[in-house]
Length: 212
Figure 1 (cartoon, rainbow, N blue to C red):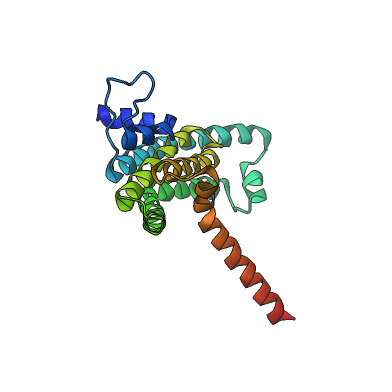
Figure 2 (spheres, rainbow, N blue to C red; figure 1 turned 120 degrees about the vertical axis):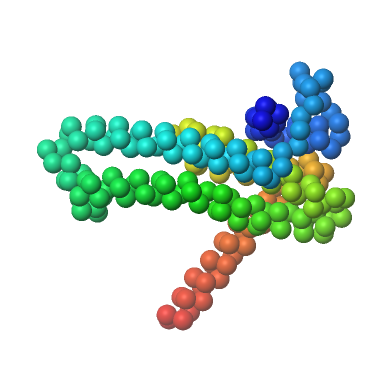
């Protein structure tokens, strides 16, 4: 367990250097004599889920605190929840609570789907580029990118920051593992977003012509 936590934190803090260590044997500064294990998908996902559960407890405390503070500024708490489009404070509280519980319980499922998508994309990209051991490298890149969930501990801004950190980890992994330059690595990571943007634009254009 100690090795997993050490590897998780190290990968999170060194998204670029960790691949120099894994693929080229270049030790991290200050870690010359300490080996760093390669995280498996199960290890990364399990530890990330533990972080998501911890974040849920923080959100619950924040929700209770906010409800108490807001209650001091409203004669009737229901007025506040009515503004949000929720009938009563009782229903409003349980709405946010149920949403939080569902998101936490389904975290492994959503994350696994995300992993499958990126592994599929990176593996085929690596094979197209003629990268040796593309499947193994793609699996490690995606597993390592899950360490970005550590920043979800930060309230409010954690989710947005996690998305940016995950993208950075994928970029670092592709750049170092596939030995691409910065532009090629950025293009590789941008492909899904470009395809989605193209698809949405295509639908909008088609709907526009249809309505006209």
